[in-house]
Image (cartoon, rainbow, N blue to C red; front, side, top):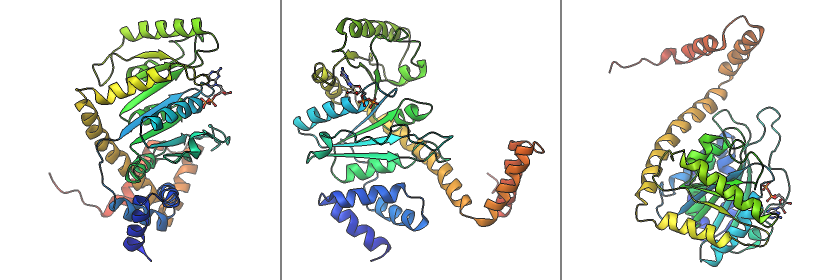
Length: 332
Ligand code: GDP
């Protein structure tokens, strides 16, 4: 079977609840091989471009803050509330070494064995089009497979957290209690896009956790959310004892039930526009890299840039000028 027939058959399996089909779709979407990409696009063509009603939750925080433990607990509670939960753990990978930041440990062992849950680590190589350009398509696939809650986990380093905020409805920031630099340690830009802040490991020192909640709440008073007029809740919880997780769940339900949740629709519209812009960038880069002559010219120009004989911006300008020579700009 080829092309559209193969895609239709995989999507039918996806609708029937096949995990194998789900994993296969996600692998195709992540692949950079042209034949895989072609099948991935045929699959996307069979999917609804925008499914309403799902919850897309982003979750970030520094390594060791307790992200996977928290998501496992929260995920179990979401399942009890009757939801179907997919977790995409996006590993931004080190841009320099290509190494994994999240590590190879088995994540969320309890949640990943539940019937109505699906956990997938997606080690995204540091692609030129930005961190995990395929993640948005992966969300579409999970929703197509019937998951009404998709949690995207990423380590809070570099660009990755803002990327995740850009593809989710609700962005949850995890912070360690009383790290002394509660607020200074967290970039202002991240706090301004957070829809909830959760102080983790409250069981270790409850008083310290409460102090952190107060400090973060105080700091938020001097900031305004970039997009919503809600007050960002700050909560403390322990993912080991489970204490406080029910309040986190209540806040999430409130966020999505909120009568003013047209801001979610607005957000999704804006995100789809940005998704288009990003897709152009990454598709252009993928296609150009696939052209042998372009690749060779790139290598030459790059060496010249390294030697300092030409400014990188000028080199790129010339290179693309040559590629686009045949494309005439129509007068507007
Ligand atoms: P991640 O790197 O942010 O995903 O963090 P993990 O979820 O892997 O947790 C890092 C460490 O913190 C692990 O040893 C967890 O058992 C521990 N941990 C996570 N949540 C809690 C918590 O609520 N209380 C305590 N005491 N330890 C926790």
